[in-house]
Image 1 (cartoon, rainbow, N blue to C red):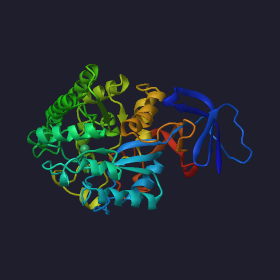
Image 2: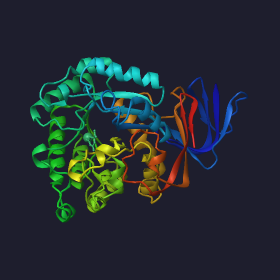
Image 3: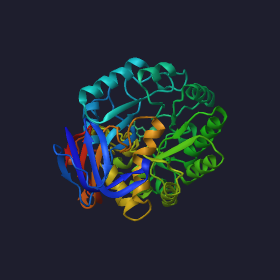
Image 4: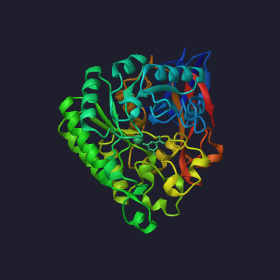
Length: 424
Ligand code: DOR
Ligand code: ZN
């Protein structure tokens, strides 16, 4: 089966391609990218005026299975991903049981295969049960198929444990994805510590709770030589720390989630628990710093931190609600609306941060349209206006602070393995 996608604005950061041309797939692979391609038996897709790019690689997703199937399953989460243009996800290990051993990794891979939706790359836990105490069998996790290690959802609070994890990861060439949060500083906080938390009477999480851990992990990565990836950076100083570390040659990369370049702590006024997320929504100066960090290349990746929770769990007092925003179905729209349309990122850089860069960090075969690669392709209509309506989410949970938000930029088509699996 062949697809011929005609006359799109084709973007492939791996080869610096941005031109009006065609993409041909054959046997589930990219066959060629070029002008006036022809193929007598191919199904033709007219993509005039649409961005044609590699499927999105979302390196920070919580699929919740095993253990929290009421929030999401591998089937629903990967199906929702396809609707958001996401064809590959890395899923975080904070399931029940935690993905700290080969059998959980195997379970996830098997379920993902059964689902047959977006490709799934499991992230193994750094420590047993993500308790921050005893290291997991990191080599076993890698052999089973873990693409990275992380205790995401929680920090590795002990610097000694993190240092040893980094030494193993460095030997095995696995990236360490760090959830940077100092628990002493974060305390019982439920939102960013600042003027808004004071006005609302909610306990705050200071910016320093994130920043001291970013600084610590950069120092440890510098010492151990491990590949460090900082998850969901949210503050100006965190970004400055990454910028300085990169300048002195530390092997560090960083990601930001769409809510951290779209919203500030002002959104918490009204106590909507869908704004409760960890790290929390920060100040306007932090949002500005995130945009600068994206523009100057300090932030390599945009990843959703898709964190589905049920209505019942979120429909409680702000203090009691779980942290998390469901993100896979709104990411592309937010990136276009908030970054590409206002000219903060050019389209090539925006595409690189959601395709090539995360694929390189994870070392996976995805994120480019180079011939021979899996035919995972999406088409985005850059000027299409739409309104976020969580009722139409395919994911099991609807916890988004963006309901009713008007966005410009919509995923129209998702192709996985050379098959059109979603069409708007
Ligand atoms: O908001 C968050 N939700 N942040 C995390 O680090 C974990 C995640 C979750 O698992 O719900
Ligand atoms: Zn996290």
